[in-house]
Length: 350
Image (tube, rainbow, N blue to C red):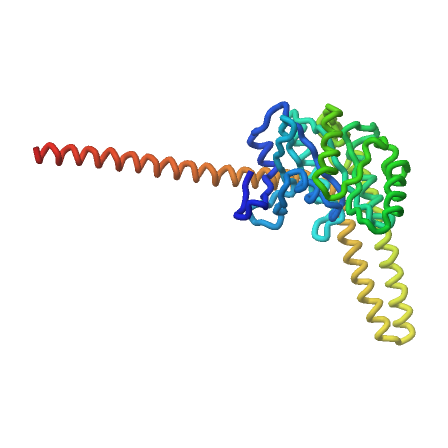
C-alpha cells in the first residue's frame, strides 16, 4: 500500500490494478462500500484502517475511480473497495454506473465473489428525495430481487441534536418496503456513528454470514451475455434518462411559448429572458438524450479506457525494470573490468 510523507495518511491503490496483478488469496474477503456522494464512504473506511485517507481522484498518481484498501482483521485479509457515489457534481450517473459495473464484472470473471456490500445513507437528510430514491432503486436493480445476507445498510452523519427524529427516520428506512425493507432484514441495518467501534460492528456482521455474493448485474452481463442497456439496472437508468429528457422537453416548449407571447406583446426584455431559458432547456434536453443514446456504448468505451491505462502502466513499469537491469549489468561489468585492470597492473608491478 502506497503511503505519503504524513504517516497518518494513506493513499488508495487501484482496484483495477489489484485484479490485474492477481496479488490476493482465494480466502481473502472482498467488501464493497457504496452510497451517494457525501454519505461518508471514505470516512467509514478510514475508521476501519485507523488513519485518514487521501482521496484517489485528488492525486495525479491515483486516478482510479474504484479505490482499494487492505485490512488485516481477526486473522483474515479484507479488501475494502471504495466506489464513486452517484449524484456527483462533475460526473454523470452513466459514467459512475459503468465504472462500478465494469469492476464488478471483471472481479466476477476472475472468480472473485464479494463477501459483502455496505450501503451508506446520511441520516441528516430530512427526507428521501427523488435523487436518493433513484439511487436506491438503481442499487436494488444492481443486486437483484433476492435478499442477500451480506448486504448491509448503515445510516451515517448522526448528531446529538434531533436524535428522536433521526431514530424515527432510521426505523422508517429499515422497515418500509419503499426504501430498504424489501431487500434486507432489520438485522442488516446499522447505525454508523463515525467511530471505529460502529464500523467494525458492521464488518463483524458480514464476517458471521460467511457468504459469497453474486449480484444480478454480474449474472446478467457475465453469465447471460447481456449488454448494460439490457440489464435490470440499465433499463432503470434508461427510464430515468427518458423522464429527464421528457421534463426538459416540456420546459423547452413552455419557454418557447412564453417567448413568442412576449414577442407578440413587444416586450423585448422579457422575450430575451425567455429566449435564454429556452436555450438552457434545449442544452439540457440535448445532453439528456445524448446520455441515453450513449448508455449502450459507454460501458465498452470505459472498459477500453481502463485496459489502455493498465497497458500503459505495465509498459512504464517494464521500461523501469529494463533500465534497472541495464544499470545493474553496467555496474557488474564495471566491477569486473576494474578487477581485471587491477590484476593486470598488479602483475606488471610484480
